[in-house]
Length: 233
Image (cartoon, rainbow, N blue to C red; front, side, top):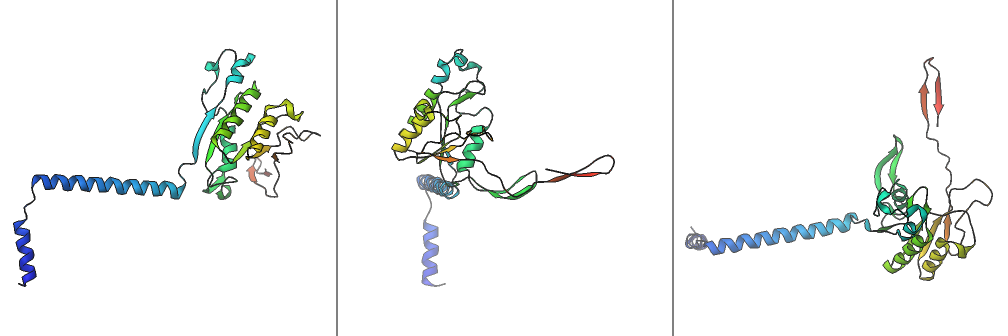
């Protein structure tokens, strides 16, 4: 046996861990374990963009002051920033939804989808309450002011009506104030077509975006009882 091996054996024999040493060792190991887990979690959150929705606010005082909202919010399905019919969810995902692989419509058009800015952090501002009452200017203006205060970079506004004078709508006034504060405002062209002069949100300080069509067909086939096959869209 060499001198080194002999010295190593003597060290092992002479070292008898005390209860205090074991306690400190266990505490140190636990601290290191949770520190490592925390660093890994933070890295994972940053890598995979986990915190997509970083805020959600709702505005209702204009609705409450109206005849349709005079009875309060207790008759409204969701007294919160949560949507009622999914409109806000799908428009927000269209603007800033992350990459989603293997997406399809009942097996058609399979592929990877995303919103216009998939790496963006998003905040939801709810201003519309019921399908009958619509959205009130007071709530729209309050949401614009809140977004300016929150320091957003881009506003995607999916609401509007027939085009009127700019000073007559909360959306026009609010978007002007946002643009004056360096915020890019993108608004929907509304859904009132295809009649003449049916496009809304035509303010010169706003990017107005309308729906379009594509040359793809999502078809299927239906076989009837007489064995006749029809191609359906």
